[in-house]
Image (cartoon, rainbow, N blue to C red):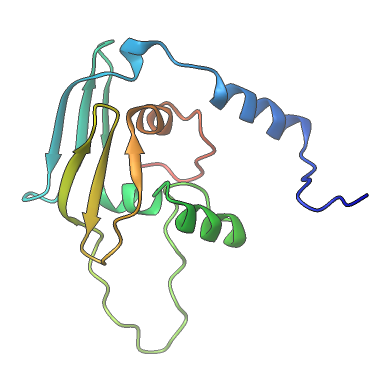
Length: 144
């Protein structure tokens, strides 16, 4: 019998996973107003139907990209959602501009998708994901 694909987790991690999988009320994950300030470069602000307001910077959202590639890379390196990649230790470091999308588009009535200036565009940020990212229900180490 093979045990490949079975991952053992701690009780704390199990409780965290159970917490993040609990459904949120519809008003908590339904935006009343969405502002994506691409020109200003300040980030995304969402006013939810339950009255809560969330704000994220573009670099934070890029580092929290929910696509499979970014998720696997974070898992392999131990980075949390929103945690930036470590700087290289080269003597002469090249300048990398802060993350900023070239465009954003609605995906149905459940998400937004960014086309980032670095060419990445496979992450779909669902309303549920964004609200949980703000509420701290997902394992985030770095504050916005």
